[in-house]
Image (tube, rainbow, N blue to C red; front, side, top):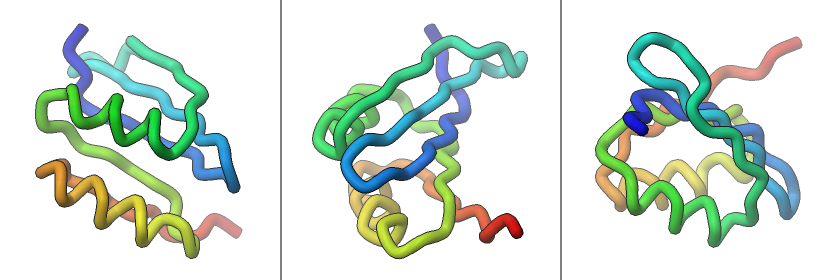
Length: 78
């Protein structure tokens, strides 16, 4: 399972993530806590991670960058 891109929907206590491969096929869908998310990403090869822009995204973005991941905040959608 080669995950190239991960999209994360942030919640207060539960996060939903979807991982896709190089062809854009969904290879993983998970619902997890913050700690489970950081454990999951620490075991992956380098990949692009997209997270929504909100107050909680700054902490998560810093934590993912410390794991040598490339995290990108998506602007708010109106």
